Every structure is written in structure tokens, then in C-alpha cells.
Image 1 (tube, one colour):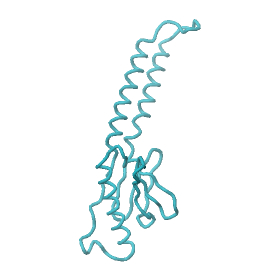
Image 2 (cartoon, rainbow, N blue to C red; image 1 turned 180 degrees about the horizontal axis):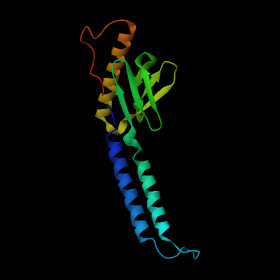
Image 3 (spheres, rainbow, N blue to C red; image 1 turned 135 degrees about the horizontal axis):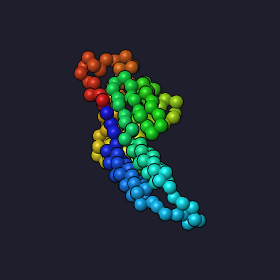
Length: 158
């Protein structure tokens, strides 16, 4: 299973900062507003609740992952999950200028792999190499040859 490394820890730190600032603001909120309105205890809870919402939003990168074997690849991105057979994938791309890897599907559509990000450096490159090996093994298996018989199957990513 592939997951982003650095972005997950950055998002955790951001969530902690967001939660801390809003908790402090909620505790210290008192008095009146600039136009003379009164602040109530519910306003404190609202500020803390907004902080909780944005902290949870900052943790969305913890959802990202890619799992693959010789049959198919399962991609969990920000908003959706996709399972694609390797037979429908033309290639695994990770261009030098790209921020993350992607699968180029047979219909020409790219499927981003947000779990494999440039910021992870050598770990991302190694992940793309493993995905390419699984892609080649899956395509060979689908084409009729049996790479399992020759012991050529790379280990799955799960």
C-alpha cells in the first residue's frame, strides 16, 4: 500500500495549529462585538466548532492511498475511489514536472495518484517503479502468458 509521507505529517501539523488557534480564540472570546453586540457562550462553541471542521478538512491527505496487485490497482484520492484493471491502463506516468504520479488509461483519461507525490522524493520514484512492474506483470498475465509460472510476479502493494 502506498501513502504520501510528508504531506500527511504536514497536514497533521496544520490541523493541530488550526485546532489550537480556534480553541484559544474560543476560550478567550468575551465582551462585545465592534458594533455593540453581546457575545454569548454559544459563540465560543461556534468558534471551536469551526476550528474542528477546518482541522478535519486539513486531515484529508490521510485518506490518500494506492493498492495494487497483478490484476488491478485501487486508487483512493481526495473525493473518490477507483479500481482499474491493469488491462485498461496504458502506462504509469511520473513526469519530471508533475507533482504526483498518474495512470494513463486506455481511453486517454489520466487518473491522478495523489498518494505518490514529488515531495516524497526517492520513495515516490521507488513506488512508481513498483507500480510499473505490477503493470507489466498484469498486462503480461492478461495477454495470455503466465508470469506466475516463471516466478516473475512482483510483490503486491497491500
